[in-house]
Length: 253
Image 1 (cartoon, helix red, strand yellow):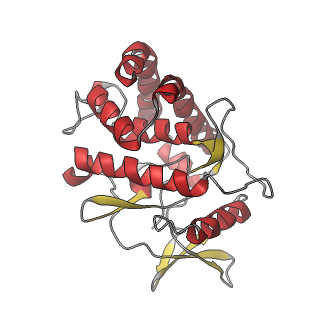
Image 2 (cartoon, one colour; image 1 turned 45 degrees about the horizontal axis):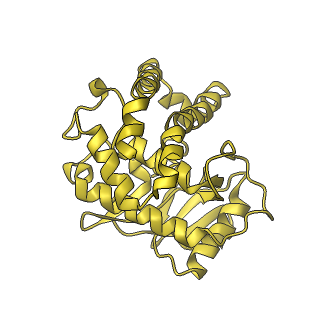
């Protein structure tokens, strides 16, 4: 178990998941406790830390899409359900005070009212049941951010927003219409939509800078991920976002 960052280090033990601690664990643990107290059922529950110094989380029943992505995860219905889940998360986390904790990662300022954003709502970090997104997992990159930043990140990954040559499934050619569908389903207000458009490229740069730098500093998982082909695709995506900035902004207004 485990994604790119911690593949092979995450194990299921009965109805729990054991994950390695990381520099932001104290804050993430407080965040998960807050979500439970707020009645948000779309995140794992924290049970504590075991004798091996691993965090112990509840196992979330369901399926997280992994490559090759199943067709049900690429439908408009799945996309809408991700938007609704993300909105529920933001509604629950808005009252969480992160100031008492150390957060290794923070987004750039200026992207709306601050809250602790997930920052990595990739396809394999969303659990589905019966074709509907039901939970966010892997909060390792969570930190002081904003709802707009999370929406921009999720839209880039789920719509997806990238060069057509890199979309080889049923979503190809539907980037703009699916972006509008996602943003409408989330309920982004008219006043925030220009800011959302502005966040698309910076959110892309932010996450891949983290991955690239970690790979260059010897992180095993990210080092395996950061191949020349992946780096080229990331560059193509960035060029596509810049070249289509006007169209992306127009479809949001």
